[in-house]
Image (cartoon, one colour):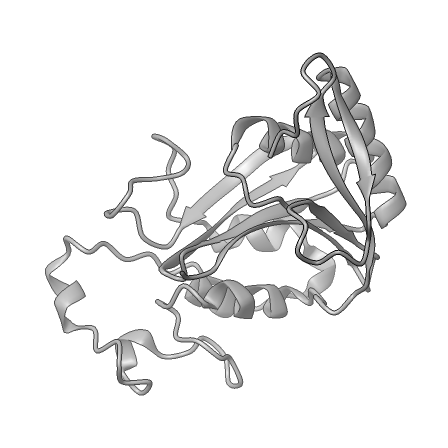
Amino acid sequence: MGTFKRVNLFYGVDHEQVYAALEEFWHQEEHTLHLEDVHDINLDSYALHERRGDWTVLEWTRGWEWVLRRSAQLHVSRVYDCPGLLVFIYDDDFWGCELFHHGTTIDQFQQETGIIGSFFDDLPCQGRPDLLLAQFPALNLNIEHARGYLTHYDIDDPGYADIDWENEHDPLNKPVRPGDAYGRLDGGVFWDFQTFLGVDHSAPVWRRFTVSPQALGGTDK
């Protein structure tokens, strides 16, 4: 099985602030947060990392509920007026992201949409590098690099057959930056993109938690 991950990246706020806003959101939704063993890496739980540099990272649970969790990220953004992203990788095949600021969705990107369709329904999901840079001016991101990471492809495009996935030197799939571990069309560029932003995934986990409806008592994953 390939990698399935969904991760929130909150910019300019710390882990305690993020947790407080999430707790407020889930309480409003009549859910309860349950603290879990921070050292239990096998538990299917949210993992909120300590802030490192500009970023606080929240790893989602393995479940694929999509609506409430995206509402939760917008609540954090609204409370602190902070920008951030949801980034995801699906079975190592492709990656995508959702950009938000001021509690509002700004843009979406999905690397490939032909196999299972878009996670963003009918919304445009080609990704706009100018909007990405505009939310994080202090990072001084290179727009050509941003454009490289937000490279979209379609398996129905005749040019798709020309990509040599086994050749790391194929110019159609060359890495965006020197030192990147993946080609720009590989799903694993999910990791290179976060490195480009300056995200540090080595930050220790501050809290692990699950969320459950108050009335039902079962864990909502």
